[in-house]
Amino acid sequence: MEYQTQPLTKNFDFHYPPINKNSSFSINMHVLPDEMQFKILSHLQTDDMVRCQSVCRNWQSGIKSWASRPPLDYTPQPKKPLYFMFNSEVPYATYAFNSDKEKWIPFDILNYDEESPIPMLESTLFSQYNLYISASRGLVCFMDARSQDKGFIFNPILKNRIKLLPKAPDGIAHHCAITLSTDVSSRKYVVAMVKSYQVETINFKLQYYVDIHLYKSQTSSWVNLHTEKLVAWRGGDADACAICNDRLYVIANFPWVVGGTEPVHEIVAYDLSQASQKKSLARTKVTIPCPLTCVRLQNLNGKLIMVGGIPKKGTMILDTVAIWELCGKNLKEITRAPDDVISRFRKRLIDPTFIASGCGDMVFIQAYTSRALISYDMCSNAWKTINKAPFPLLDDNSHYFSGFCFEPLLDIVP
Image (cartoon, rainbow, N blue to C red; front, side, top):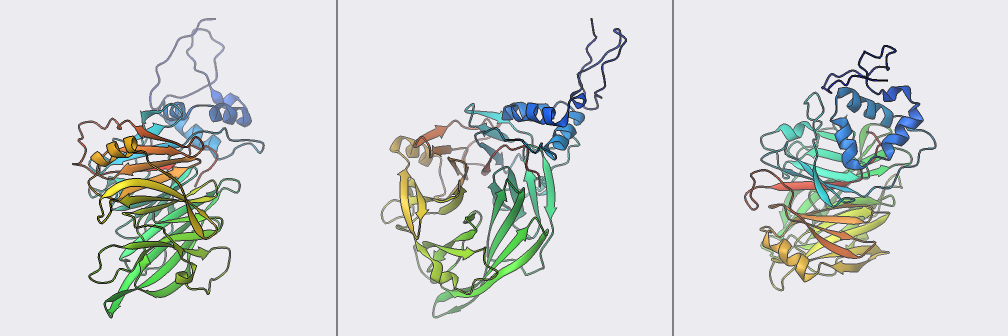
């Protein structure tokens, strides 16, 4: 039996094979049961899934539709995380590092109707300073850093998004951090936001009001969990908080005395399982064992992981990067980046701060001012320098880069 082929276009329509052998036809996956469609898709490699959505509108909408109704007996196939990197000058030139194949793949964040799933990416002021980003499992939360109330939850593989309802106006905080926590089994998520407002200075000590807000997907609304006035410290910025085992951990900067030099970091915690926490945040602190240039928190497989930059003695110049795990009320150092890995990373590092993002057993560390990216695999205890992302016509140290790590999942939608 001979058939004619028909080229694929954006509006290509899939239909049933005709009886007339002289007519053209294409394979229609919609004739298969939903369970079979989903199992076929779940076995695709991540980059193949991305390509499938680029075939036409029908395939893109079909994959979204299948993902929204997985079979009851569906078991996700384990996939290594992707690291998504973007640039402040060319927001539509985006790449993702595939940990399975250890290579960069073009990763289009646009839908076929050319509408950006993250409207903040369309801004001419787009950079890591204008976005708060937090990822958990297959979802990513973007929050506009300028307004601190416009946010979206987004599945980068399916390109599905929902807009977070804005919370009650409470002003622009001097410092703000967000974190996303996703429960894949229940397909629910929460977003925590920690805002610090400088109010006054007494005896050369800064004072801040610290607010903790929580957004729940079940109610689609924000609640104010905690407000406290604290002396000589404040909450951190960007990704300086994480949710782990129903506790919100926040990086606190001490003492922030006017005229002081080295900032001192500690971790404070808020119990999300309780209706309210009467204990002061300052009484929950966990001491960080040494001065750090910057601190990042991650929840990896139910463990609170801290990534910090250790400075050279007597300076705030980055010497190496270390990783700790919270065990009870103490931090246990797991590893430090070896000299051959950190030396190449430092060469491209202008600012002593960096991005740290991870999921599963992988941690990725990226420089803000270059495409320099290193990773650490907690299973194999191996550090690795990753080749630069192939951004076109861009030089390091003259552009701002940002990124995040996420797990490519089909069965979790906002």
